[in-house]
Length: 76
Length: 209
Image 1 (cartoon, each protein chain N blue to C red):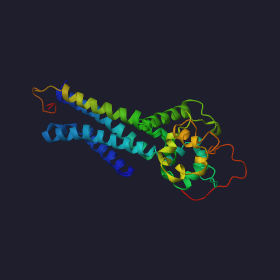
Image 2: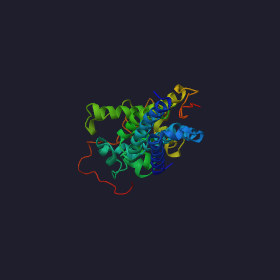
Image 3: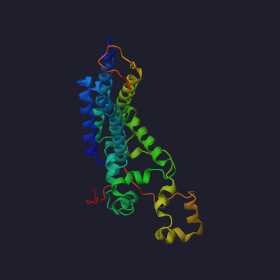
């Protein structure tokens, strides 16, 4: 697989998880019910956390010197 | 930070992340990589922490506690127009902050009181949604009310230290301070919320929030 497309795919996945987590957080903030706090922490927090960790993982797992790549996987 | 500002920040962060999801090739450039780090790391974590801080603050509000249907009678008890009702008298006379009335009396003023109160809240949620919640009049405290929570404000106050009833027996004040004689369950200030025992004659004060 092209290293650039692999990095882009990982960015997309982490981005989608972060977006979903942030949307859950936004909903919880405007929904003032006690269960909203639990949803924010358990669902929103988990999605954002996993998204951020996956993004960091995609950075460290990217090849440091891609050969013949457009450069999207520089990993620095 | 106001809730609306946090919501805007959260949506802004999500929108920025959306740009990278649609066009991940932005990260090809050095500036794009730096921006991606901000969008995928700093902004989401900052938004999350700000949101959780906001929710923690909100969970201390009277409105938050009373948003559970089961707590409605307890909220109503704060408006009973009778000074012998301890909770109502404290709420109506602002002896406790009216917007944090429940939290002020029902949190533990020991070192981990706030943490314990939050875990207690999670337990309430578990019982409310997954367990069998009791009727409002059957709700009991998990442990006897500690005088420490009363003394947090009343200790040293003239009305407390020099009160005629408190000093009628020299042993009373010492026993209260040592938590061996309960303020609320030894027959002195035992009319607190009294949900389910109001009768027909109880009147309600229309003021307050």
